[in-house]
Length: 446
Ligand SMILES: [Fe+2]
Image (cartoon, rainbow, N blue to C red; front, side, top):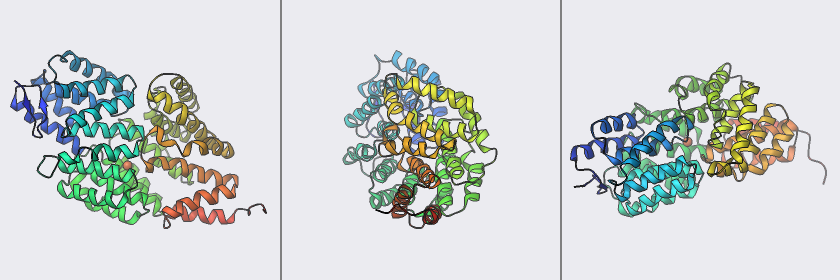
């Protein structure tokens, strides 16, 4: 006998108690509340043949995009696949998606979770894992459309509807639909105040629109409901640090690094990405970040030769540059070159974006600003191919703007800074850059 969950999705298990307990796992994940893995482990200890529990665990581990969790993923997939004959079609899709991810086929994995969501449009876990995949692939419009596809099958009466809206809000934001993103994100947050992803979507809108004061206020005023027990808090606080930098308060950004962004101990790649990205922005602007680079570089060091995900590699390189770790710089570069020759999604990412970006950042770190421009400028426009959000990828433009100023390339500096001011006319960073560009020698006469 099999059952259905609270959204009507088939579950290949006969214990209503197990299905009920799994619902808590799903909701913790939707809300980014700790700790869905601990919760599913407890469930699986009691019900080792609960297929969807294994499939969920595999998906959650895969979508950390962190090789550090690969060993666990292998074990979990083995347990899931051992139950393949018992699994229903939905569960088999989840298992196949995680297997594709493990093979390095990130597009296939994402489309397989996407297929599960098409066939079972109320499978909120399939939608969420597919959205993580779209995020790591940099598929801005799919972040929106993969959620929009299933929305007709939902309404407020379906449990976790608010979390689905939070996912939609983020996709709308990454697609540039800012007004709708903000409205949907606020609606999602009103439905469930734990929804750190919806809060994050609204913060992104404010980041993209240069509303640093609004963003800071939004995160601060909502934090009492989303921050406690949140696995994703470090990233929302990273956004808060970006708002602080834009407001001209680097000291506050460093305090956020010390107290919030690093609070989880940088145990996973995504936290380290934020640590690096924050310190890099500040360092590029000339702020002394003290020993923090060394701390972040230490945490990246075991991952230097992963060659697993080009977006992570670039952020690891930032730390190795910031901490002046030459051996790790070399090891990472060699690993990236090997990865570029391999198969799978990351080979493409590393070839097309990773290696030029790594070389560009290294050049910047070595003071070769002209070379940094040569390397980075051609990849900036297609950098979505190695994933992340617009806000995260802005680090390329940020670095380019500073490089253009330092080489005295007035035309490029003017252009890059004009772009930024068009989006964020009040940003103290942009205004300071604009002042510097005005002091550069003029253009050559036409
Ligand atoms: Fe973000």
